[in-house]
Image (cartoon, rainbow, N blue to C red):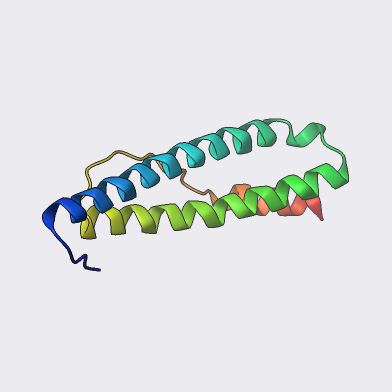
Length: 102
């Protein structure tokens, strides 16, 4: 991944990429809060809502994996310094939710 142009142009592009990544981290954190809230109410949900919540959770698991790989790329290739706390997916949670939904 390389940028061509003057130093000022390259810096401007990198600043924009950095801001977009920071925004993405904020969106991820909000999504994490929504997932947490949904999971705390999972036992109270009817079958339809629990299945939809399971789908939303599995999408979050996929996004979580992508955020981890994107964070590695941004740190190593773009040399951005940032802190991101990524949710550690527990396989027993996935299995339990799937059993409840089935």
